[in-house]
Image (cartoon, rainbow, N blue to C red; front, side, top):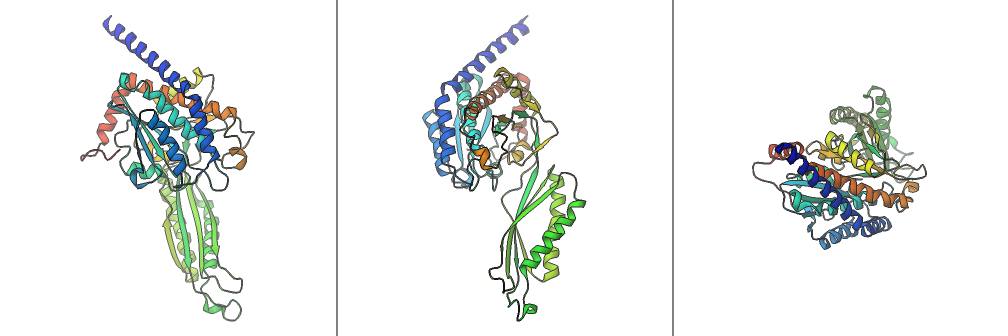
Length: 408
């Protein structure tokens, strides 16, 4: 009888906390939508998100959060905390835009949703023993700010990490492609292209040979492995042997292990270009490698329950792959979810100017509120489910550095 009474009591606490967290999100609806619109109206690219970071930091500071900017030597990174419970729940806020086409990946929705979820959980944090940790993560579209924040120890104390991503439909459970990028430079020797071409070392030829070798390699790469690149410089004058060629190449694969294999093979193609022409090769990693995404089963189920209560029907995509995200690196260390929250985009795909045009639509605004409410729901369930709480706290204890956390 006593055990049944305790279970009933826990359910009552959970239900009340769920209602209060949802009400806290709804109570901030106007400012959350305004934040989403403001981020959309002033898009800032990777590591230049100064105004965007300041908007998020200011809103959370006004709500009583302790805010730190410039975390991990990233001027546009933000950490904002509320509560002092032992269960630290992180909401990851993205806010970088794409060059030339603004918020064509919906990061204005992503960022505002994370802020909304943090505000919702803050309303019940003290009662549930939660420490809410909003992590503003710059440069997801470029060098991968989450990886740098992870390496700096910002997630050392985090028991669970969450975010949602804007999309054309609600989905859960998908993985992502691991990704790696290189800045490629060939240095040759200039010469007159007609009078003495034999005296030159053609950097463009080296790049062309490497690109051709990669094209031929594709047949032998494992299924799901992709290589794509763009040449940004390959000489200045048509009658001068090009002495310099620059490019950026990305590799993607279903897992980090397959990515490592592909990287070895593609590196050989670049080395072949140098060997065949005599050009000097320089390969410099561009940003951090992104790992494949692993989504926590319980958190996913909790998120699905929340969305269904909001009248949404998320589509399961277990085993399916989406693009790449630095949230994958977080998910290899911390239990994580990264579902998508959908709205009508007129059929437009992400990373297009057409997709960006829907970022301030009524559907996008609803996605901000529904996504925030659903993430807050997950946080409450994690805090009030005894088994899950123990699991998460044990995970933190197992990975805690012996010297203590470096997190903010």
